[in-house]
Amino acid sequence: MAKVAMLGAGFIGDFYTFSLHGQRNRDRVHIIYSRDNERGKAFAKKHGIPRWTNSMEEAINDPEVEVIIIGLPNNLHLDPVKLAAKAKKAIFCTKPLARNAEEAYKMLELVEEAGIIHGYLEDLVYTPKTLKSLKAVKQGAIGQVTWARSRETHPGPHSNWFWTKPVSGGGVLLDMGCHCIEISRSYIGKDIRPVEVMCWADTLVKPIEAEDNALGWVRYENGAIGQFEVSWSFRGGMDLRDEVMGTDGTIWVNNFLRTGFEMFTAGGKKGYVAEKAETEKGWIFPVGDEVVELGYTDMFTDMFRAYESRKSPEETFYDGYIVNEIMDACYRSAQSKKWESVNLRTWRGMEKAPKITALQDYDENYLLVKEETMPDSSVKIILKNKKTGEISQTIRR
Ligand SMILES: NC(=O)c1ccc[n+]([C@@H]2O[C@H](COP(=O)([O-])OP(=O)(O)OC[C@H]3O[C@@H](n4cnc5c(N)ncnc54)[C@H](O)[C@@H]3O)[C@@H](O)[C@H]2O)c1
Image (tube, rainbow, N blue to C red; front, side):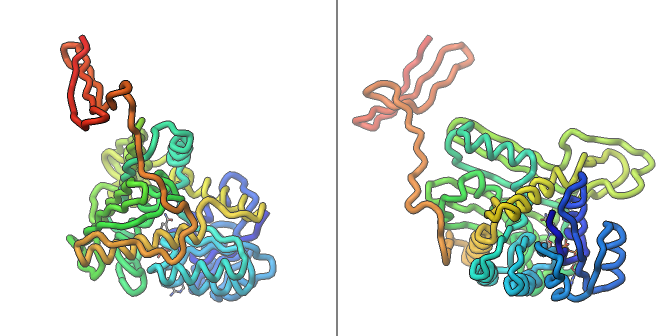
């Protein structure tokens, strides 16, 4: 059993505590830090937490606390890491790890120099569907991944600080692009180097300085492409969908909206439906167990198992740093309108990853390009001559 200091009594602090305290879990929040004592006290009462404080230092240095969880706005991720490193306590930080790669790298250096366990709380690579898909990909079920597309769109975040660039560090690209980038990276292979990016980002709808819509492509060294699509102006709830294309298969994942649980209510559901739902009347799309479906439960299982066995979880500050570095390159590309290289300060994956190849021999003279059964039941076979390179076709009846 580990005792936790939860930093932040807002939206994510709530979700994290619900998932930690759910299912008779043995890890407990021992102290909640909120800058407002009344809010902290109310949070503690709601979740059965023995202590609350408006001092971050007090929460982190509480002698019974072993693990710190950061659930604060993006500009407040670095300070608690400094304090946890000094106290030599394990630390798990929400996404994005930082506002930019420089800040993220500082955080990585701090935890590694202190030798403490660190985890990057990227819940969306831990959704039950994603975990199962990633396992299938690792077992070779869809061959080599060529393209992993990930989308997160909703009508915009729930607190003022997200919309304030100096505090948040950026708009939707930073806030939700981080999820999509790490999802695609997980499918393509976290040991494959992200090389360059192309990104479009614009402020289409909201009266803000940062971007409210962004699309981008991350090219990996083996030739695979990670595509992300994010929006803070999508109407209709929260859309979390991924598509993975491999040389031998395809995976489509819908994590949240319209996943098979639909309800019609003429009078209204009378309260919360699901994260970012826009209506509680008419046809609505609730979610069975939100903390499970969004990956929080499996994420914390990995994090606390790692803590207990003094090992690294699947997602560490290093992963968070890589994602921040990719997003920095995306911001440069959105400005330059050109492919921009991802300039990693440290790379611990494969050097010179081999290009994706899926060449199929037809016979000793030809490679198979494509075989298709036509409407008249004949089979058309497209071939490439190995010596001349000529493309030809033959029909089998
Ligand atoms: N899926 C996810 O993993 C996910 C989802 C939502 C938010 N987040 C992340 O969690 C972090 C917090 O977001 P949130 O949604 O909980 O925001 P929120 O606004 O709901 O809560 C933030 C909390 O921090 C407190 N706070 C704000 N400014 C402060 C300050 N200057 N000093 C001390 N406390 C302050 C607020 O009072 C509130 O309790 C962000 O980094 C966000 O990106 C992650």
